[in-house]
Image (cartoon, rainbow, N blue to C red; front, side, top):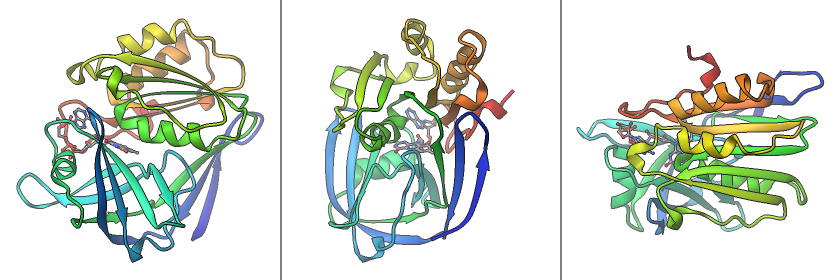
Length: 261
Ligand SMILES: Cc1cc2nc3c(=O)[nH]c(=O)nc-3n(C[C@H](O)[C@H](O)[C@H](O)COP(=O)(O)OP(=O)(O)OC[C@H]3O[C@@H](n4cnc5c(N)ncnc54)[C@H](O)[C@@H]3O)c2cc1C
């Protein structure tokens, strides 16, 4: 249920409309577990408590509640990759990295297991005179990138630039947009190195009225944003850059890397 809206960046440029939702905690059942790609585990959740679930923006996130490595309750952020109210199924994609309780939970998950989720608490809806989208990220942002590519209207020009470990980690999206995909390969140990993404970005045309969305390891998101501002002179209101995680730190995200000095 929407009970609050606010607007950022009103005017000639893009606008980010903030929508708040009633915060609901749900207990769901694991219906399917799939090794979607070598580094991505796809988990389908269902159950009566999904009724009323809403996720209007592709970069929404929910909290998942899992046991921490010491057994204490822990929560982490995940993107609702797909929600189908007809079948009552919610899909989450988990990066299979070795280190954290959320990834460990996904590796061990089996049909019949339960998962508590909360949210989304709010959504940021990006709109306005956007002629082209450029979506940049790493494997943690693939759910948000995939959703946006699939949910943009037919014919919308959208370019994606995503860093993953290998060619088998590439994903195909069902879309009627004009989608051009660029993939960068680097190991997960090098996920905080922006060099591969920047090398391709330097050769990409960024037409006027391109909205650039970035979701990646925090240092990479910051480096990409800085490059776009300094070298490509993209106005800050045309960029949304978030650190989805930070190498070497548990549960570390930076919602707007523009705030980080
Ligand atoms: C808005 C938002 C949406 C997100 N959506 C998704 C999503 O849909 N799918 C998804 O997989 N992630 C997503 N993430 C990222 C996810 O929340 C983090 O990767 C989280 O830290 C994973 O929790 P964990 O318990 O597995 O590891 P943590 O306990 O948080 O971290 C343990 C160690 O693992 C490292 N680590 C954490 N994540 C990674 C990684 N991806 N690769 C390599 N090392 C890592 C940390 O640096 C730390 O050293 C999202 C983050 C945000 C902010």
